Length: 295
Image 1 (cartoon, one colour):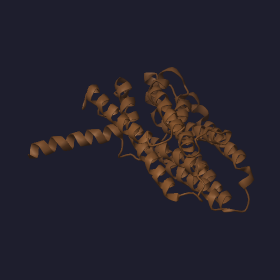
Image 2 (spheres, one colour):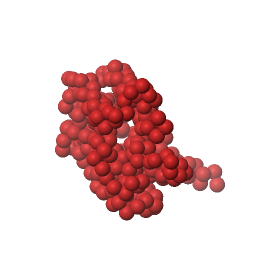
Image 3 (cartoon, one colour):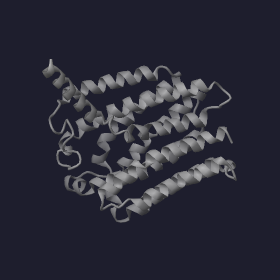
Image 4 (cartoon, one colour):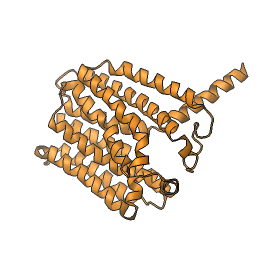
């Protein structure tokens, strides 16, 4: 009995390490764009209970799809992960679990995510199925382009459009602009994240924006964040004034500036700290957009 329990706990630990559910920054960075789309789409004179239900569904979907994405990424990167200090102990790279069993986990997680997806309207379902192409193409981008972070931005922020469509059953120019602003946000924060692995990545031939712009990495991240803020300013121009929205938008801008100042490409721990701060940035922008309804 004790032996069986030990085996069970061992598999649970491997599953947690595979999916990275013990590192919530990953699924939160997938969820926050969904929350922005919902907050921007939702009219709060409607049933607030529906907003909470949709938020919960998108949160659960984010956890499931991010978990599936992590496993699939590790399957694709199995041989590369063995050569990188930060990733060499991941379960698949360390041969703690087979690729076949890992694929079964991916299928189960995607099936559960699909059960959530079909709770929405037809347009949202179509968009969700389309996002699968992005999600399962991303792991290959680092092999063929220096812009995998841009592709990650397209993937991780797709939930903005899905969330909007789930409420309004359409796609507008405004929501595309919010999506574009988020893409550059991801381009910035994932370049910071990628700076941790630049030395190992260059040795094994992995491409990234972090490597491409390593001599001017702060300038590149700053430019990405500037584009994010510029698009948001244009989108919400008529709301800027002496109000709660402007105060919250200032806090969001300050959170991005803090990251640029804080991270040092020669100190991996500072890159990770600045990257994780985007959980706070995501929350602040959610509250910023949410404030539109109470201003």
